Length: 472
Image (cartoon, rainbow, N blue to C red):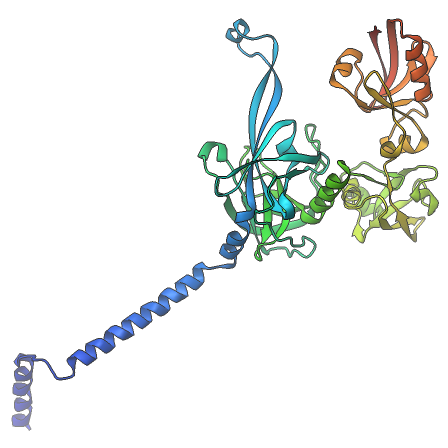
C-alpha cells in the first residue's frame, strides 16, 4: 500500500512538469470560447439597451420634436431707481423686456402656451428644437385659464399627439418638457423632467397678483422651473395630458410641487379663441358662498347658494337662495373653487347636471348654460369707455350692490388715468343726475359737450366713491 502511494506521489510532479505542447484541437476550443464570450456580451448589451430604452425615453423621444421655445418682447413701464438714474431718465419711463416660455405644436402650425408668457408681448418668436425661428401671430389669449394660442406660417412641423387627463392614475409616470432657463443656457433643445401624477383636481387658492383661476389642476412632482411654462405634460405614450403652468415654491425654483392645466380645458379654450377671439364664459345664474375651507362642506354636504338671478337657467329649474349645491357634472362641490372648476370646463349651449338639497331633500336638474350677461349685453361707448346697463342678471354675475347704473365693461388706459374709473366700476350718479342706464350717461355727456367739470359717483368693491375730471 505504501509503495503504491509513493508511486502516485512521484507521478504527479512528473505530469505537472511535462511540457504543455499544443493539442490538435486547441484552435477549435479557443474559437468556441470566444464565440461563447461574444454571445454572452451581446446578450448583456441587449439587456442593457432594453433597460435604457424605457417608457420615459420613448415618451421624450416622441414628444420632444413638437416642443418649442416661446420668446417674447414686451414693453413695460418702470420707475427710475437710484439717484444716479435721475440724471439720465425721467421719473417714469418705458423699456423693452425679453421673456421666455415653452409651448407645443398642434395640427396646422397652432402652438399652445401660457397666457402669462405672451402677456403684453409686442413680438413673439417661436424657436423649434433644431434652432429655427418663426415669427408667431397671437390668435388669442385668456388670462382666466392662462392659455394663449399662437399661429405659425408653416404647417410642416411635427404635431403632438393628444391624450386624456380624465383617466390619469395617481402615481403613474409623466414627463414635463420645456426649455427652462434657456435665456441663461443658450440652448434650443427642450429638456425633460420625469415624475408621477401626485394628484388630480387640485385647486390653488388665488393670490393678490394672480389673474388666472388655477382649479381642477394636475399636480406632479416632475420638476417644473421658470421657462417650463406652457410646455406639455405628457404620459408614457408620448401624449400631451396637460399644460405646465405653475409651481408651488418660495424660492422661484422647483420644490417638487408643480401644476398643469388639463389638456381638455386647454383645447376647449384654444378652440374658442380661434373661432371667436375670446372665450365665452359659462353662466347659469347662481352665486355660491365664497369660502375655500371645507368646514361648511363637512357640515352641509356642499356649498350654499347665496343668490339666483331672475329668469336665469338656475331660476327656471327651481333652484333658490339657501339651497345647498352638492354636485355638478358628477363632481362633488366642496368649496367655491370646485364650482369654478366646473364652470371653466363648460360653455354656452352645454348642459350641466347639478344636484342640490333643500331641507334634507335632494333635487337633480339639467341646466342649459348661457353666455355671461356682460358678454351678451349691448355696449355703448362714451369717450373710449364701454358701458353696459346694470340688470338683475349682470348684478348677480358681477356680485354688485347697486340695482341700477352703468357698468364699466372696458376703458382705455388714457381715459382711466383722466377719469379715475376702472373696468368693473358702476357709475351711479354724474353731477346731480342719477344714472339708471347707459342712456343717462350718453345724455349727460351730450349736454357737457361744450366742456366743464364732472363729478362721478360710482361703486367699486361694494363701496361708493367719487372722482372729478374735466371734459373738453
